[in-house]
Length: 441
Ligand SMILES: [Zn+2]
Image 1: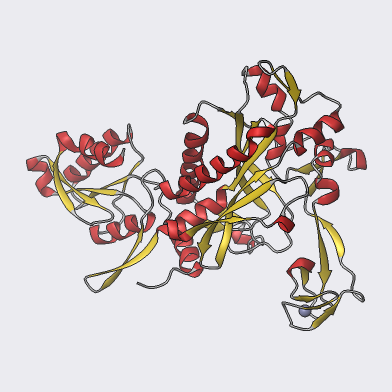
Image 2: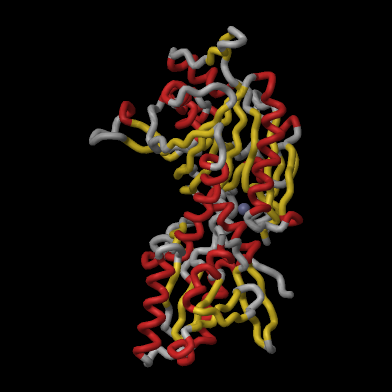
């Protein structure tokens, strides 16, 4: 079996309509990508699977969709205005810009990753660079109008903590989940959709008593790891990496990354952090609002601790794509298959007429498509010969191909082909929906 490379993934994504370079007709925009017809379905399925698992599937969770634009004080409270910056240095030789913590070398003498020349940090002092994307609200571009595109969805949850608590009559423990776009002016974006300046997050803030935070942290690490495995990622391509004490933010009590083995190495899909009461305390202080929780049975008032599982939608989508990609030898030819989990595959079923110049066959195939559409995501396709159509459907991960042939007109049976086994079953039209329902649910 040949190796899965990023070149193969990027090529498949372009060829089959998963992901295109943004503004491609103008030469593209660095590290910015558009999800095409297949990509939008896959990404939506990833988000739906997450929402189903963490909101609809639980009794202790609520959903939220907060605005991208927030009061600028939010980012002072969260520490993003002062702390969310990287030290950058420009190589005087090759003019490339790097994060200081990405430069090989020790102390003040480093090596440029671009041209390999020496960079002396005393002669070339690093400059702070804020990662937030700044914009102006309203028609006048003065300091009073400055606001930011959110660098994380989490703060929208924290500022709504008491709103959700009151509106939903919640008791601890409970959590709030949100999916949405965030923006960071990354210095070194790259690795396809892995690190981009515009990205989508799926974040949970789970509010607990200080005493139970350690236990909930462990539970969420296990829960989130299991989610990726359940949706088809091979467990040996996934690992948990606990942050060392010197990696943790000063307020954090613990943090574990869930990492996936991409072709470019182990990289973070999601981080689960025990953030203590840092965020609510910061917002309470800056806003002057009481964000404490009153525990009636215990008759005590306190700031809840929070466990934060924070995942990237684009990263998860990329991991599912990479992990599902495989090449097989079939009768001397190479078959490319996206073995996506049935919950994630963009299209569940394709209906294919064996002969597209036979109106009676086309009519029956269209009728079958219409019937199945009420229950599944189904595509009719007659744009090529059957062999080519199978190949295309395999490459986009379609689970079942239903083929209508001349015989179907007489015996009212169709051929159903399984993506993974390529086994073909002849199924009565009357029984087709039940057959597919059993397979797909
Ligand atoms: Zn250089």
